[in-house]
Every structure is written in C-alpha cells, then in structure tokens.
Image (tube, one colour):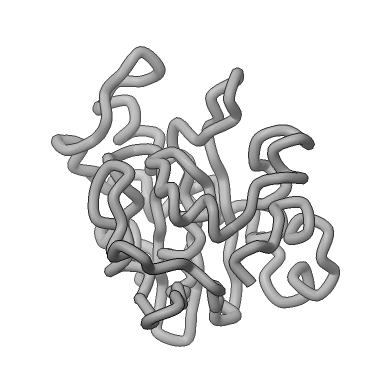
Length: 195
C-alpha cells in the first residue's frame, strides 16, 4: 500500500522477483533514516521533481489509486510539486505492472542523494517506456529515447538522440543543458544495468 516504506521495498524478495529495478531504485533513496521512515505514497504525494519513484511509476506505467479514483502515472504529475490529487484525496496504493525488463540509473546529488537526473527504462507489454526525474519541473516520459530504444534496445542506440532541454531545471547543481546530456547518459546506464 501507500504506507510501504522505501526500506521494505528495497528488502522485498517478492518485489525483487517481479521488478528488480524497483527494488534497486528503493535502495538508492536517501540514507537509511530516510529509507526506514519515507513511504512510496508520501514520495508520490510530495512530487519532488528529483525524487526517484516518479521515474519508475511513469516508465512502468503504474496506476496511482486514491480513496476516490485511479490515476495513470502520466496523468498524475502536473508541475513542480503539483499533482493531479484533489483536496481531500489520499493515495491508498500504487499498482505496478510487471515489465519484461527494466533498469534504473541516476546521477545523485552527493549531499541529498536526490537525483540530479534519474532515468528508468522499461520494456512493458505495450512497448518501451522511459521515465525521467530530476531534469524538469516534474517527472515525464522521454519519447525520443523510447523511439530509439524500440528500434535498437542498446545503450548505443541513444548516442545520437537529441534531448530538448529548453524546459529543464537549471540551478547550482546542474544547468539545463547538462541535465539534457545526463538524460541520455543515465538512460544508457539503465539499459546497461538490464544486461
């Protein structure tokens, strides 16, 4: 459910069997104190633009269930710290379809461990999906990388893909242009992690 702690996801043998990339992602969140207190529902409700789970819910095509309705991942993230949740609406569970394969890679901020850029690549029953976090005001799908990977599922397939970084974040940690570069690099590492 929504109150599942990051540490529980990271230690779950059942989750590792179904979606190893999600387990690996949960193990990269923050530090032990954060992993032992933070929850998946809390992370998604907060919608921090650099949190890890948003890339996963988008890439895996997850459904976010609330006390009132079900929301597809790509309809959930609206803008900086803004979601599709209405007043009084609470996340009760997150449903992840099991992908054929998936991988996650992030370039973390060394102090906070938040993703400067994080990318999950998944091959689902509906095709290739790429979820990106940390680069823009909220998590998003990256269609140019999805198209390249659909033709050739390899890290090399993305080398010549141009990422439009015009709406990306630019701050003391990384410029928008550098984040655009990192999207391709992290996607390549995510594909390589799949093996």
